[in-house]
Image 1 (cartoon, rainbow, N blue to C red):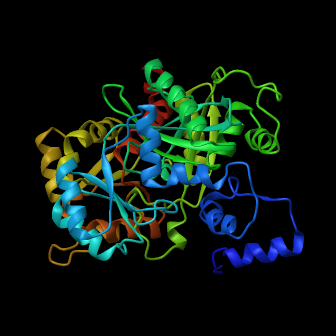
Image 2: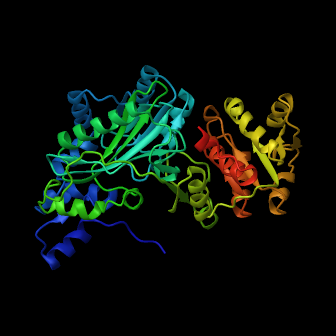
Image 3: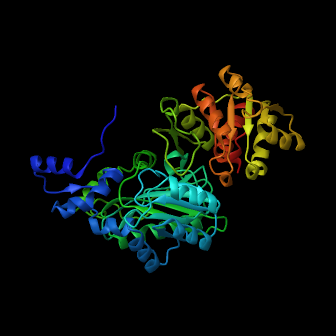
Length: 457
């Protein structure tokens, strides 16, 4: 089934029939937020976070003014309206850069590019760029990604918890495994996140729920990626994990009942003693033609939760519930981009030590053999039109596929794309993020060896 997106005309028809006192847009996702300005222009009262606050959060210039006034750092970047301007900005801030249309929904058409050729290709083919539809070019910072969902009543802020993503920056937050409470963030990082969240909620003028995503680099410097002046997909997860009825509290705030009136006087509540994990669920097998490689563009269609006193067991419950097949024996097929080989090596060694057979395409196999891992070579699909990899996937000989791509290579990874599609079609568990592979190995080592690497750390 296909449904046309909600339009201003649709909403006005409902308003004319129901004659409400006003409408709440901050609980309706990005579509409702995008509809707020035209509805406001038609005289429809917006309850809670208003149009001016939404503009301060979503308009690039307005948001930068707020950030500069508060002294809160964010990745360097600019909005551009033509290709040459985009190239100049990228050269100024340095590659790699994250490029995306303004006012994106679900990370649509968002991409990391590593050189001028890839940037020009993106700006020419992936988006419409003009004065009415600027494209954002931001410095891509590698680090840990964290996020909060919070409630502001205009004067006070309440933060139920801080979540940390397993996957580093570059994977859409909706496609990341998310953990509460944080598992690597220092108290310094958490204090900065709390401070920035309070300042931004008040300065932007939030009344109700809002979501902020952060990057913490290796020096524990914290940057704000974006502020969403609305509820996010993690509100149900965080509400469950913290036992805080966030939607109810926010609704009361929107109706004029302050946080203090509701009994919420602390900015940040004590963290739980159990681990809670949100794992994304995908429908790649039902969505033909979609590349399964995780990127800044969201591709998950659902999520599952797992919780336990052990982080490893919580992770295991979540990834199993999300539909991932977790096998503790078999064959791992590996095809890794050159820049990822040093990071991937200790992970593949852990599979090898657990008794898995290792197979790889020629370049990856050569690298693994040089480092003491017995590896069977599988011919690339482009080598003499070989289909031995596809046959192995179809015949159930592969337990896991690990595939990463070189972002400098542009779109020249058709081999990897075909392997990923074959893995999905044959229900083979596949990973395109090495961070997710590490989590799986932590789970497998506890299942097989009774060793919990994460909890030991």
